[in-house]
Length: 117
Length: 248
Length: 235
Image (cartoon, rainbow over all chains, first blue to last red; front, side, top):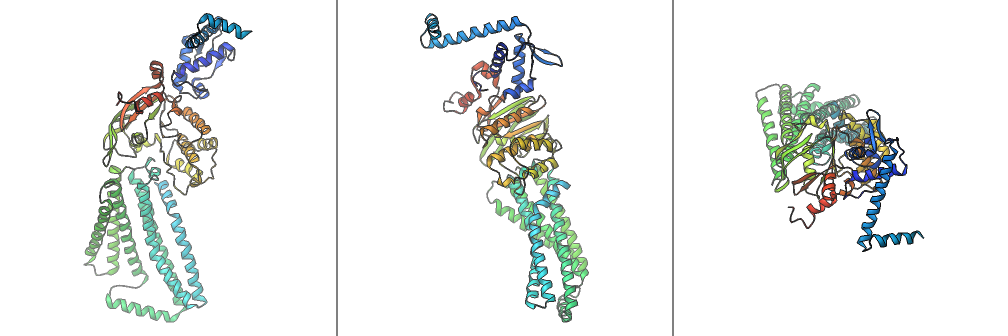
């Protein structure tokens, strides 16, 4: 994975895992790699990897069971919310980029429709 | 310590093997010359063997000074100084390995020489007369020198010990040069001067100490003892210098 | 775990390290950054006990670095330092002879990963292979501190990934890793703290993720700020 070194790497890895959860690549209830394995998988510092799980847990997207490891939440509603959140974020990002070109929401929406046809 | 010595031995192995190889060739030439009665071959091989005995012992000492120089002045030094061994151990392995090499090398050439002379006597009767003549000549200089195996062994021991003292003095000069004078002006000159002064002082001391002793054999033994003791002092001074001041 | 107190090294008229006080804690991977000649190597060699400081001191677990600390601190220098008669196998045997924490099986596994063979002569190795050999033999120790001076120098892209992995495998809560490099990008993701050294002086020691979060800049950006031409405000 290529990182943008200007923003926290834990945030980038967290986003990657969130995407996996939303797309079902990591199923609800699935066991996630241990902190050290996560660090190796993503070639990141182990403290950064630990931070990723801390934050995911804080957002209720995964849970650590003592002695067993970290698991993706089985709460389908929570994953649904995540999906919506991420979609909104993608839209906001898109709109920001369009604004830089001087294109605002209405026109952007029209352009999307055109593209669809 | 034994592991350090193993590697010191490994470092000097090539020199020793070369020396041994040349000696073997010269010895074969000597035997061929002796039994095929080729006088020129015999004479040449005797000359070469004599040179080898002296040169070989010198080479072992010089080689070890060179290795020590590299071990404290080049990147190779990390090999020794990153290991959990004190300078006393690191240097101790060198001193013991080298001291033993010189003594054993000396014993080797001494034995080989004794065997060759015995063979020569057995084959050529008239050489015995020549030997007698040499003995008389030496006795006319000093009545106490005995040209027998015992006497020669004492002389050899004295000479080898003085060489070991010279080598350990060179270690000290090397350590002072690398640890105290490094980067300073006249480093080379000063450390060499230190080496010369100590060497001259030691030989003067060796002479003074044995002046009153009548038996030449005993004199050489005592001198040898003094030189070995001096080698021990050089070792302590060198290790202390390294321990306190050497950066590699 | 590893620290220096006002440590200073003067070579002739040049001050290589100038009163650096620095405390490195276990459980972290530190990137020691600065251009060539900034004092990184000298600091490391003093911490390894190879160079004696002109003043100040280096401590391991609160005690001055010594023969004892060499048992727990693995140092890898930039320059090759093996004896010329050695093969890859001899190098491993040498470490095995002197370091109790060295594991020969692990060494064998590492040289295999690095695509080296035991019968190779060290004098015949390319600079990249030599760099890999140094890493393999150093990381085959189970030390408490690893100090690697320029571990990525002369190493191709694929082998760099291998080395990063190898480093991360050993970066546990109990260990301290210190990597120096001028290839800053190689260390962005694996180091969590960065030590910046300039002209022998310590500029700062920062948490890199915090810096990314708070200032939105990378280690490389900070490097440019400190050493680049627009440095007026910094120095």
